[in-house]
Image 1: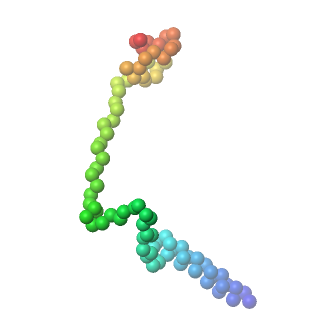
Image 2: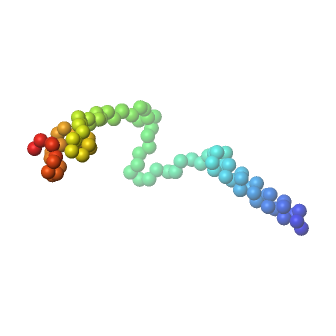
Length: 90
C-alpha cells in the first residue's frame, strides 16, 4: 500500500510541475488571440510601423538658495512663508 501511495503522489507532483512549466515557459499549444470586439480595428500591415515618438518635455529647473533663518533650500522666486524672520523678499 505504501509503494502505491508513493507512485500516486509522485504522479500528482509531476503533473503539477508539468502544468506550471507549460504556463510559465509557454511550452503548451499557443492559442490564437481573442477576437476583436465591435468598434475595435485590427492593425494591418499598412498601419504597422514605427509610432512617432512623443515630444520630449523639458525639465523645470529653478534656482534655489539656503534660507539663513532655517537652512531649508527655497526657490528664489518664492514668496514669504509668513515667519517673522523670513528673509525672502515680498
